[in-house]
Image (cartoon, rainbow, N blue to C red; front, top):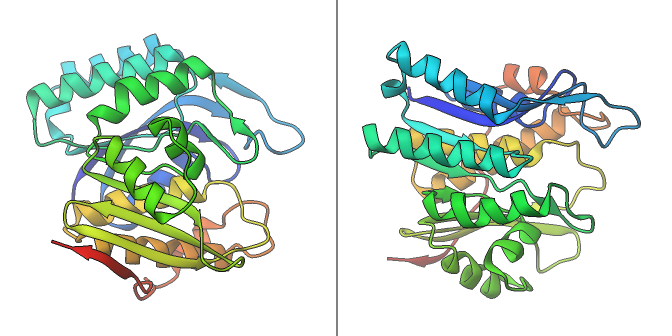
Length: 277
């Protein structure tokens, strides 16, 4: 069991941000300390929502309190997701420096939650640039979608080859690119590029997917890697678990993670090895 510090959004209804990350990591046996950057009634994609940002200074005081209690040394990994402002990004970067100074082996997964197609950026442009410049270079693992990878690498992503090239330009050891176009119109690809090889999982294109799938995938991937899975195994297990969550959530407007958590662990998703050292 590992201890993970997770920094992202939190919703009262539904499962996005920490409300997806925490169940994913706990399902795999990990302890999670959750710091919300914003608290919302629900995902803002619904007709009505209410929210309040948790100021970076408040989050900093929380970390200071954890430190004064002598607990920061317990953290094995950090996962960052939704960071709505430059000050939130700066807080996350400072926290990483602080943790790494104490425990250089701390693993950092950066889920760069900055935008998607066709909407584009859905956080402040300055915050997106700060994630690119201050957080991604510190990451051991990153999990962008195609739009996010293109923004981070300042390059178009048209196919698998350009995705692999762009991921290498990030300078991150392991990169999971989510939802690349597949060879068929009805499929999408999750592509994992790591020092141990590159792997892809083909998944069916669903007509309607609840919010939070990317958050769930990031939590699962980190959880499996912390449990000792190889990159290919972590991709296979995470993709299968996300598919199982989508199956039990069929027809719902939000992920049904209570039903998912009560279901047995699915067998690993078929994964293709593209390269191998």
